[in-house]
Length: 152
Image 1 (spheres, rainbow, N blue to C red):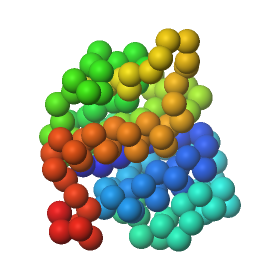
Image 2 (cartoon, rainbow, N blue to C red):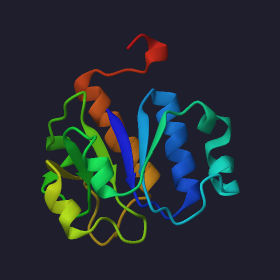
Image 3 (cartoon, helix red, strand yellow):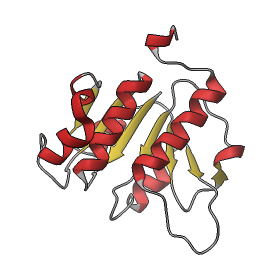
Image 4 (tube, helix red, strand yellow):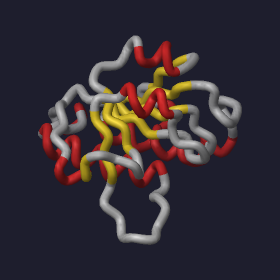
């Protein structure tokens, strides 16, 4: 399993997701361009010392990333499948869109599975890092994946 961010806008969210990936033993892919310079103070502050132990791959654009990815699962508010009804595989790649724009239509159409986190009516969306944690946790639960530090 990997977590991928499509053209992220907010360094603090990327830092938080790097920390999540480091703690869970899950690699993180970043699809550029990003809305901030790599190494931004907010990225370091949010990722703390975990950013140094996270496995990070940067990709020049969507096409460069897509050429390296297996089955892509998109987190979206327009998901076709509710998170609790989705079936995940251990080698799935979780894709989260830009905080301000999501993903373009061609990316939405190219993924294998679109998943929505059930939310109450009238709310727009969760923070991207919160969504990443929720979905990654469910993916790990289903596949019984665990962090390498915990023997998995």
